[in-house]
Amino acid sequence: MNLSNLQPAQGSTHNQNKRVGRGEGSGKGGTAARGHKGAKSRSGYSKKIGFEGGQMPLQRRVPKFGFTNINRKEYQGINLDTLQTLVDNGIVKDSVDMTTFVANRLATKNEMVKVMGRGELKAKLTVTAHKFTATAKAAIEAAGGEAVTL
Image 1: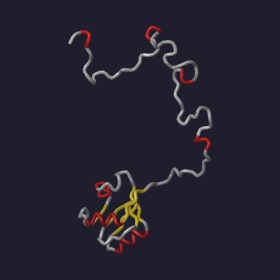
Image 2: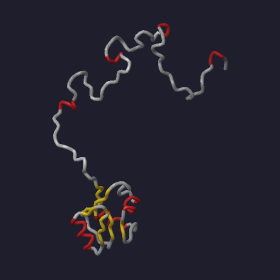
Image 3: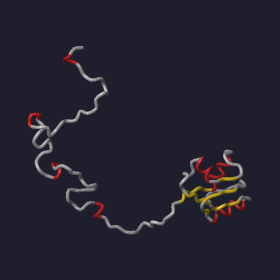
Image 4: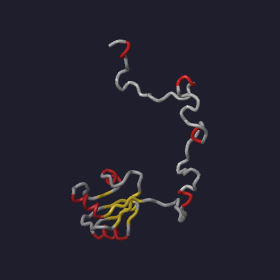
């Protein structure tokens, strides 16, 4: 090793960018490798998302219709066959509530849960959720259980 072959340790340096706009002597002065004129050569330039060179952008060309209800409530649906699977696997015995849903990753703690009627429920369960469909409620009660609305 001597002064002619010293170099930093592998991975210790990160910035290997060209130092542009630092005078004519550097070879990258003047226009600073940006070319002449035009929006891209200006400082502060940033292309708008969806910009198509002045052509009418796609999101303005397509027709718009419908609306989004700002008061909509989103529910995480959980079916009866899922509850029956939990019983079959020995995860639940007699009651199912939000803590069970969160523990088994069927819903997150901030979601609202709606129990729906797909499949059949054979076990007698006390199910606690935010909403129930009519068929789900009937099936839970037919199995001898109870549907408790939060």
